[in-house]
Length: 78
Image 1: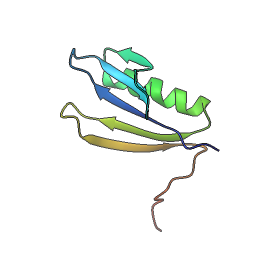
Image 2: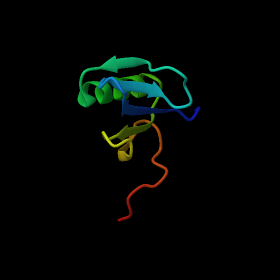
Image 3: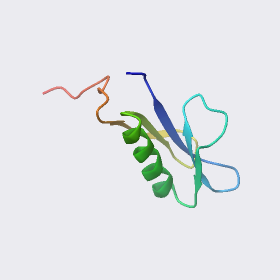
Image 4: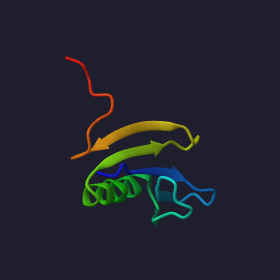
């Protein structure tokens, strides 16, 4: 399975972008961060899983999720 990922981040115009990692353009644009994250999560589920990164308004990653059936590279212990 190919390693895939998506990043949700805010653009200068205030919209939220769902972008494939390594891509030049956004896959989709949304009014809210939640809408963009939901679209990115759905895309990853359709592609067989991967890593979802959500950036806050400051541009720093605030949340990472592994979407099944991809394997979590750092699973919780215990």
